[in-house]
Length: 443
Image 1 (cartoon, helix red, strand yellow):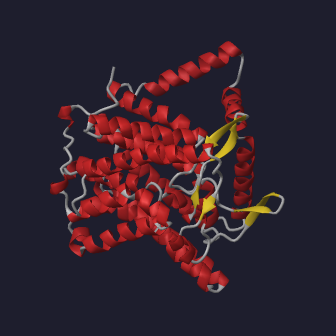
Image 2 (cartoon, rainbow, N blue to C red):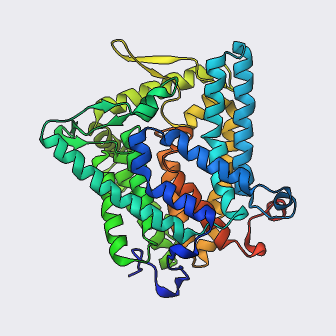
C-alpha cells in the first residue's frame, strides 16, 4: 500500500532548524505562525500582501530576471496580473477614475494575481525552503484546533453568531467584511443543526480550502507528533467549514497521490470510464443521470446556499455578455437574492468572475496559467517526487474549488500555499533541463 501520510527518510526532506533560517524564512515563518494574532487585530487581508510584496521588492534584481530561468507558469501569473491591471484601468477610465474605486482597484491588484506571482517567484530569488513553510503551516493548522475548541466553548455558553470589528479594522476605510472576527453559529446541514465557523477566513468555504491544503502540505512535516496534531487541526477546519466541495476534494487529492505512487495514472481514466458505463448500463441510466443525482443530494445539504450561488453566477454571465472580450474591469452590479439583501456580481466562481471582469481575453490567460502550472509538476510527479505529487493534487483541489469562489478573493487566505508551491517548484526544478521553460514550450 503506498504511503501517502508521511515522507520516507530517503525522500530528501530536510529537518527544521530555526538557527539555520534565512531572514526571509524567519519573516515568512512568523507571519504564518502568528495568523491568529493578525486575525484578532483585523489586519491579515492587508498584512499578507504587504509582507509578500515587501520581500519581493527587497529581493528584486534585474539580473535575476535576465540571467535567471523562471518557469513559464510563474510568468503566466504575471501575465494574468497585467491583464487584470489592463481591464481594470479600462473600467475605471469609463467611470472617470473615482478615488474610492481607484484605490480599491489598486489594493485588489496587489492582493490577487500579482500577489500570487510574488509568492511563486520569492523562492527563486531568495532562500525560502519547503520544510520551513511546512513547519509554519503545521503550527497554524494546530491553531485551527485550538481556535475551534474555544469557539465551541463560547457556543455552549451562549456566545454565538457574533461579529466583531477589531480596532485596526475600524480604521480601514471601505468594506470591512473580510476584516471581521465572526464567532461560530448553528446552521442546518442536511436539515440537521450543527456548529459552523469561519475561523481566520471571511467565508466558510475558504476555511474548507485551507483545511484541505493544510492537510496535504502537513503530510510533509518530519516531526511525527506535530504532523499528527496538524492533520487533526486541518481535518477540524474542514469539518466545521461545512464545505461540501472541500470534503470531496480531500479524498480525491489523496487518490491522485496514490495513483502517482502506484504508477497507474496513465490507466486510471480507462478504469473510471469503464466503471461509469458499467454502472449506467446496469442501472439503465445515462451518464447525465449518473451525475445529476449525486449533485441533487450534494445541493440539498445547503439548498439555499446552492440557489444563491446559481443565481449570482447566472446573473454574472448575463452581465458579461454585454462586454464579452475585455469584460467590465470593475464590479458594477449586484443581485437581489432575498428581500433587501444583495450580493455583488462575480462573488462566486472564479471562471465566471474572470469572464465578467476581464472577458474572454482574461479567461484565456487564466486557463493558460492554470494548465502550465499544473503540468510544471506532472513530469516530476511521474518521476517520483513526493513534493510534486502533493503539489499536483493541491492544484487539482484548487481548480475545483475555483468553481465556487473567486481566486482573487481567496488568494490572501491561502498565501502559505502559494509560497509552498513556489518553493516546491524551485526545489524540484533546480536542474535547468527539467524546468518547463519557453524553449520547451516552443519545441
